[in-house]
Length: 166
Image (cartoon, rainbow, N blue to C red; front, top):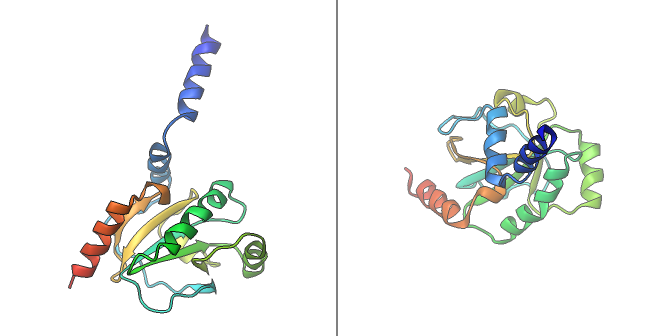
């Protein structure tokens, strides 16, 4: 009987929604809405942004992270939709040779950058991957969570608000 209750609890946990998973990752990562990030000194490996964006999605990921790999096609699609003013930056703390080898096998069409000294990872207390934040030109966090939890209407609202800001 106790084994069945335990199995039901485990299955319930496994069937939890992606939103709940994203929310739980927020418990492990120290990012707050409204928080201002330090200046971004990123080393770009692929597809460096051509111009300063209105909003930047910083996607914390790793080549070894299976859920991160599953999100890449979704982010490629978001990038291809060409939301005016949005730049996606996949940020990893791995070395350039490791990332370049990964990019030879799995195509990423958005910007890829390195935080090889973990300055941003550590300052934001990023402990669980994958994780994403949206920041304004002023480097203020306006959204955090899982990329698949960011719906088009919310993204468009955040882009409009950022464009309207002085």
